[in-house]
Length: 120
Image 1: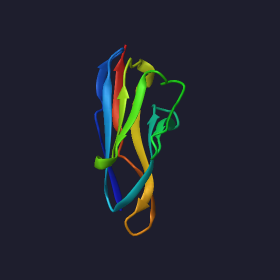
Image 2: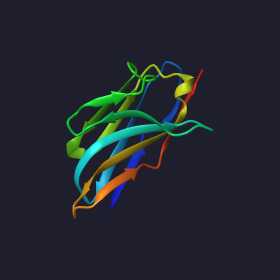
Image 3: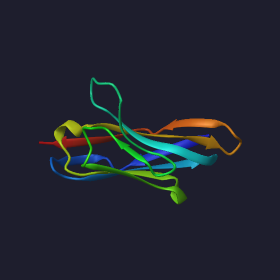
Image 4: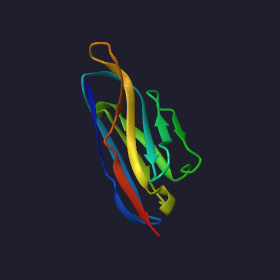
């Protein structure tokens, strides 16, 4: 079993910055992609950013140039540095981690979500 713990959300003014963290623990053998999603009130959950095991990254158009995803493989942790935040970035942010467990099972784990609120 794999657990994810997120931290770093909060309230910030437009133009400000936040850094989200998501630490994975449990019966982990390997981690493949580590992703961040967000879900605004009344909207579907959307993919924000991805980082692969090889370090390749993807960003949604809405966050390109403002957000940076990174990972620390030694700590099984993924980060999302969010700069120049806009009110439309307000959402619950979820991390998602996929990989293989220590006994060979494939996992697809979700964090509990962390609220990001950007005031205008």
